[in-house]
Amino acid sequence: MSQRTRINHQIQATELRIIGPEGENFGVLSLSDALKKAEELGEDLIEISPNASPPVGKIMNYGKFQYMENKKSRESKTKSRVVEIKNIQIKIGTGEHDLTLKAKKTSEWLREGNRIKIDLFLPGRSKYLDQKFLKERMDRFLNLVSEDFKMPNSPQKSPKGLTVLIERGKQTI
View 1 (cartoon, rainbow, N blue to C red):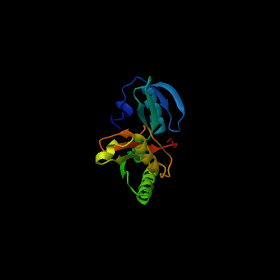
View 2 (tube, helix red, strand yellow):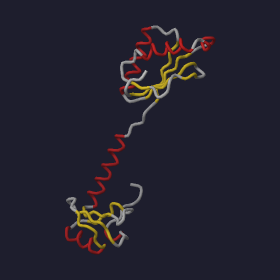
View 3 (cartoon, one colour):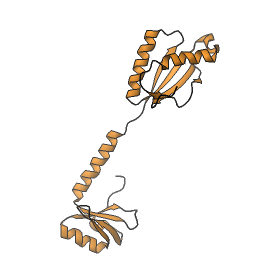
View 4 (cartoon, rainbow, N blue to C red):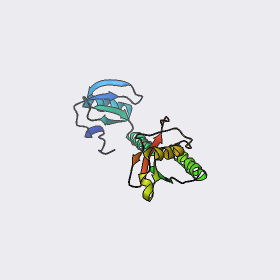
């Protein structure tokens, strides 16, 4: 949590929408009434949503509240995953066996949820070959990839030769 949560007498709002310890709704109460209700139940009054109109307060144990918030933040950290862009480089003369191995690795990376940048490396004069021929060579490799993938853009000319970016999704070639 970025800002400190206010509890009991630290709360500055005059009226609060109060939620009970079991999730029941006590409605809108004045701060003093809400504090009395919390004291009756032997719990703390915690300001859950200070920006709401009126602010929302919950009656519960503050230690339990902190535990639940920490648990939520830990879960969100484990669920967030950085998508990497992996690179595969092939050449016009790359043999079938090597293409198969690289396609297998590409499929593995797609399964993990990564994006893959495929470079058809064109040394020297091969940069000036027919575009149709180069795209056929790229398609030859893409047909070997076993996972479903989509291409946000068609193959583009790059300083190295021909480049395409693929990511997991329904196959669109």
